[in-house]
Image 1 (tube, helix red, strand yellow):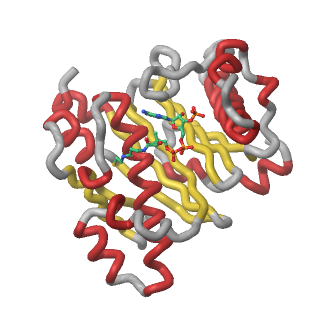
Image 2: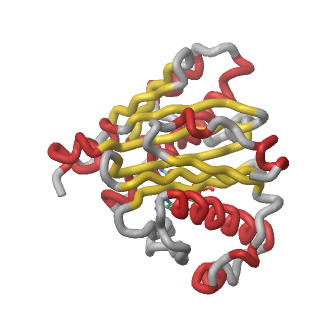
Length: 235
Ligand SMILES: CC(C)(COP(=O)(O)OP(=O)(O)OC[C@H]1O[C@@H](n2cnc3c(N)ncnc32)[C@H](O)[C@@H]1OP(=O)(O)O)[C@@H](O)C(=O)NCCC(=O)NCCS
């Protein structure tokens, strides 16, 4: 990790259990020339900033996969734009506010991972009604006024993490209104209650283990789905 990255590095590991490996780097210092040919082909139409973000994710992911003994290989995308992790691996990538964060784990104890980073700024006007459920909006309204916008942004980030964790397993759309999130500000943890989803989505949403933190102008969140729920989840 470079000095620059060390300064940027939030304690992402604390968002996950000890069996998840995490990495982060600055997206500004990412090197698109490190993309492998198949990845560079995917990024050919990207603008400069998106290409750096894409490269940052691939570089961090390769570092973590090497730690797990995996050979360096292209990390391509599926039809839903999710990374095609090597067999036996689950993972997640996010980039925002100048930072890229990646989490990976062997697909044994863990069957789904999601991570998200956003700037710690209020959720844009007009988005709250779209992103937040009725009970989330009641929770927001009870917070001190200056906290409401950034807490709405936290809910947004959490829902992005949930989506990245659960969507690859179910491959059906999951709407913002279908995951009702209950936040515990004291512990930095959250739980999810599914609303009106298909049973195979509902059982996974309800099983998500979630965490979040605010650090240096950013909000970060995670979602983990553990294998012990597999019997109830089915194949
Ligand atoms: C896919 C989505 C979650 C990405 O989040 P984002 O905040 O826009 O962007 P981030 O930088 O945090 O994440 C982008 C990364 O997500 C990953 N990603 C994209 N689609 C994905 C999917 N279907 N499943 C898992 N991961 C996905 C990719 O790794 C991507 O980075 P890369 O292209 O460089 O590899 C978002 O664009 C989206 O579609 N959201 C709407 C659906 C939703 O959130 N519903 C709420 C459910 S509760």
